[in-house]
Image (tube, rainbow, N blue to C red; front, side):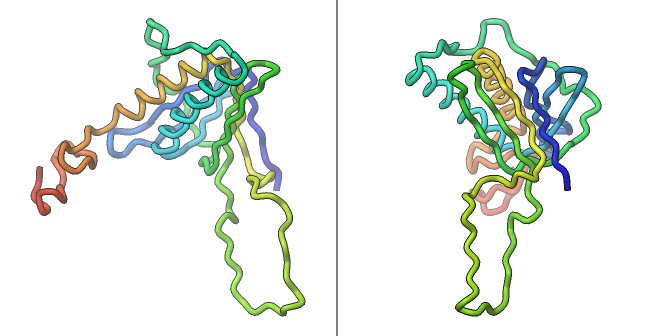
Length: 196
């Protein structure tokens, strides 16, 4: 089975966005460039962690390599436009990888598809003489589709700020239990199941 590597080095636009109403949103990373548009689906927590880890990566690049990194978002609000259409899911993200390329002073983000054989358990009896040892490291399968994006530190900072806005734009949390509030309320465990 062939796999595709969707590389954007650099993209014209790379953003995190959602489709659907709060509570039913599907999160996407979307890259556009060279007449191509690639959208990959992922979980809200993955978007949140990606933004957090990118901030750490920029701080570390500044500390270790002296890279000029913008401290915060520009005064002008960044890209607030919706995702480009059509939003066709290429694949669902299973693994996210981050790197900093010192030679080009760019951040490399790689989103790798969920592997079909990630949870393979083989049950059965094995002879003591026949033990298979997988000597390959636990790297994501090379046969999986991936989206690779290379961003400048400024573009990375803009991505981080938008990703935070997208994550925080969902349903507000319950002040008592922290679970998301639906417009009709929710069954709060702190109120022994009464609607709030």
